[in-house]
Image (cartoon, rainbow, N blue to C red; front, side, top):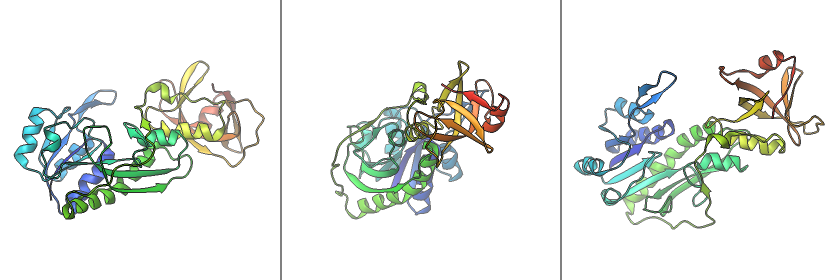
Length: 305
């Protein structure tokens, strides 16, 4: 099938590569413009742009799917549009331009967690079974008919970054199956059913952990905001990021929430109920470091808030 692909971040790359490897004719790739990254703010192409160039595919870099983008797509006469985390809306007339319309790989079991941060919000809510859904793109947000879906369980403490990386690979089968479904039945698709929830975009303040909550709730919150926007608390009134946090088997602990101690070489963080293992931290203005080394520099004990 002749396909135009739209996507930007690293977790959109596996779907693009899978479509090309399956023998589909990817006639063009749309991705967002080069963005300044790092301390030196060097203009850097998106991961999808890099992958498309490696595959020798035509690329349009655009932050909006405007009239110029519509003309560019029309010139390539695609039968289908596939979008994975492009970062912009597809509106008419572009929405109806491909013969079979557009399909979207979304990282949730729709209609649950529609919106910008489905994996992050699901993990933050304590969910451990995460899904992917490929659906027909319509004007309403993440509301189109479902073509394929799948899910899998993740262990407690799996970060959003790790879960997205796995789901992006896992989701390629759903994308390829959806394309095959449309090739056989252009009218295919089932309406979404069930309770709708919305996954609001994350802000820096979403990363602030409340250590007075139970250990499982703190760990779930940490997982949902790691690596972005980043989980943090304060130490001596300065922010400190908690880069790696893990569950512990022990739950009986009488120390005040936020107390951090070194026990048999393990950095133990007390919460409102139970404890967690703190593995890596990043103090304000410094690079990430081993939590045990950081704690030894403070006499083996600290209090986080």
